[in-house]
Amino acid sequence: MAATKTKSSKKSNGQAVLMASPEGLSKGSTGNDVKPLQEYLTRFGYLAPPPSKDDGKGLDELELRSTTKPGEFDEATEEALRLFQQMAGLEVTGELDAPTREKMLAPRCGNPDITPLTNTNIASMVDPDIAGFVATGGRWPTNALRYALQETGLDLPAASVRQAIHQAFSTWAGWTGVSFREVPMANGPDIIIRFVAGDHGDGNPFDGASGILAHAFFPPVPPNTPIPIQGDTHFDEAETWTITVPPGAGQFDLTTVAIHEFGHALGLNHSPVVGSVMEAFYGGPRRVLHGDDIAGITSIYGGYSIAEASWVHGTAITVELPTRMESVRRFGFFTRLIGKPNTTNWFHFALPTPVIVSNDRKVIGPCMLRFQTGGTNAVVRDVHIYDGEVRVAAHDGVNLSGIQPFRRFGVAHAPEVLWGAGISIGVTYGGGTAASRTIDMISAGCDFQP
Ligand code: ZN
Ligand code: CA
Image (tube, rainbow, N blue to C red; front, side):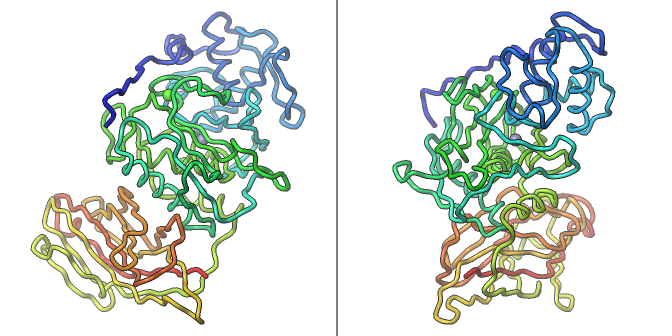
């Protein structure tokens, strides 16, 4: 940890004023309380900025209007507020009621939800009338992306930050043929990752602790070639970042926010689908993709090619610490694993591995699991992918329970397979009945790419 750590704990001004706004602010309201509301709506793309500052970008297409009089809750403000409520999954009242104000105070991504009328740097043009994921129209001209960390932040050891970043890229790599390799800054990476505070020179200043947590720049819209800032992802250094699940009070999960921001860096905008990774608001650790995110990313990049796929039955599992198990029984082709109360353990699958096929060495990943648990007293906490003794990806803190017919875990940097694929599964058992402490491990597999 750096000894010179300095953190500002100041709240952004806009937030403080929004907090003070009287409940039920609605059309016809005037005064200083209306301004922060309009600023928020403008900042996140729901309301056009006043005409004097307007660059005209996309206004006609989106039919977004500006307020005629800042500080006056006019029709344009109400329309914008309704759109925000719709996007945020709130009751559409057109009033700044308590749930709406609470949502506006919630920590969130700095990228605009609709279109960045105040910010041409994070520009995208999307239809505000949307039901699911939003593709910006941008995408990388290559499937082999390179990233670098310009800073690793002050909160965590550099190795922990690198793990969070690698896990976040691996999460997206589980569904597409896009790979992500870390390179030195000097190598001209496609995606530069930064930890910066306040004004950091890109026209999108951060706001102190909480509020905006991070932002990322969309890839170019073909046939345009990438410009340097595109894909770059910035985390607010004023936040206290963690990779521990659950995070401590006032801390934010770096892995979760990184998965979200890399969604932007790949070309997705905010989704109104509750529970999706691409939701604008931070809702605690969320380290696996939602169906909406998967539909979004594959709509841009498609799936990946599979040269070989290898699966084993759940009966092939080995238990690292048998003394912590209450019972381990084979039922036909699956294994029922009941842990002793309040224990952790590791289970392992060794997978038959086609290292070389037709004289061609294959690339490892993604790996897959099919299982079900008796409830939240039996949790698949971490999933690690190995090639021989080398761990090639760690999906930590995914915390999966219940019926899991098909979970996929990617490997960000697409390494060639050398020795043999393995999946290690970290599990946590809570208290409760034996039935609730049950994991039925059904199948495990790995895809090998050309
Ligand atoms: Zn975002
Ligand atoms: Ca912030």
